[in-house]
Image (tube, rainbow over the protein chains, first blue to last red):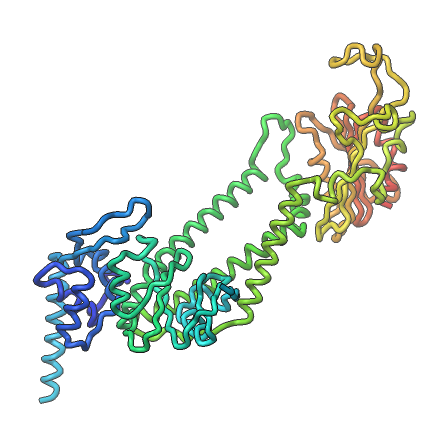
Amino acid sequence: MNEKDRGPLTEPMFYTLMSFLHQEMCGIEITEFVAQKTHGRVLLGPGTLYTLLGKFQDEKLIEETQVTGRKCTYRLTVTGRKRTYRLTEKGRKVYLEELERLKTCVHDGEEALL
Amino acid sequence: MKKIRKILPLSIYDIPGIENWLEEQANLGLFPVFLNSWTTFTPTGIPGTRFRLVVKTGKENELSLEQQELFQKAGWRYAYSVSRIYFLFYTTDPEAAEIYSDLESRGFSLEPLQKRMISCRRRTLLLYSVLTAAVLWMLFFFKSKYDVQPDHSARFTLILLYLFQPGSLLVFVSAFWLWMQHLRDQRLFRRIYRALSQGMAPPPSKGPSKAIVRAQLIMAALLLLLVFSLFINRFDILNPWVNIPIERFFKPYISIQSIEHESVLPWEELFEEEPFGGKQENYAEKKFSFLAPTWYSVTQEAYSSQSGSKPNYFSPKPENGVERYAPDLDATYFNLLIPSLSRPTAEAQLDAYRLVNLEWNYAELSCPGLDFAIYGTEPDGIWQMLAIGKGTRVAVFRYAGREQLSEKLQTLSEAVN
């Protein structure tokens, strides 16, 4: 799916972007952050996490900052390496837009109850 | 350890179907140690095991340790890489959370595969277009610098006969079948991808299909046949249909002696030894096409029993200063399925026999009892060609010798009667 037709962020997407707001994170830290933040309500599966990280990187919402560990030169792989990411300006903008949309939803929902 | 092999009864792109099937196998006590069209199991499966296929992003061939650690933490173990498409994970823990927390993210995870499929389709189309263009150019536009009388459409009928040979049909049927299967797989994958990307459950898999198993078996058989026929064609010595010694060939043909005034004999009979280099000079070759159920050619070369008197360039004093007369007759005989193909086939075979560096003249001869007789001559008068046809039978001759084929029509017409 392209950036243009992405539409609203899904819950795992929203929380993954949220995890980068204040610091750089690696995969395991993101999972822990989301579980902690949502008190276990949103559990990021490893498949979901790596799909979202790949997607966000493609859309330039996050960028890789650090790769620790040794690169195995005898393989076409980066086995053993740990990757850390940070939010880009574009990513922050997307997060804030989604936050605004959610606030409007909540406001509309509450207003409807009155 | 004992290994059990099963044919994957599902499309390789039916992700939910494969996962369910592997889980059914685990309930039977089988664990997949190799997953592909032909899957291998060991009897180490644990009932209740869940399997998940994760599409490769295309950037990595193996999972990084960090990824493996994260999957392990979530209760999933990495099994292995499945061809170039998936990573296989499994868990025996019923409490382990799903690898994908939501349907959308699973849909997004299929994006790389969707892109690869589109790019593969483009590459395949490009490859087939280039191949088709190359073949068409070779057939209809290529001009040899030695060919003084090119006619690009002349051999079309002969090409048609070759296309209807079992080997060619086998290649086309296999390619068409593979293409149909590929299209079916692509449609299935697109449906799964679209549904998941929109946050909907994927369409339910139709489950294991006997038709897919049958298709795999037929495909394997076709492939074996294809390899076998290519092997046979590559090595003439193994092919019982080529280089058949003429004394062991029992289909009717016009013998070279029957058109010669003087007595001629094969080399072996005359000199009681093999020709130079052991090269066979009198042999037949059988072919088969569904458009020409009877199709064979006979090559004959004979030598006069009398020595000649003319020295030649290569041997100024051959056989003590004399040259021997040695006529040559090549002939191809057809019995076609469709009568209207007779004349075009004759013309095509004439073109195939044509010596390209010579200028040929063609004339129609009339002969009672024949539908047509086309006589080809070249200025030096050494080589002659004759094509005759009657109904579905066609015979085409190429001759080098002293006789005039136009005067031998009566004898030669026996080939089509």
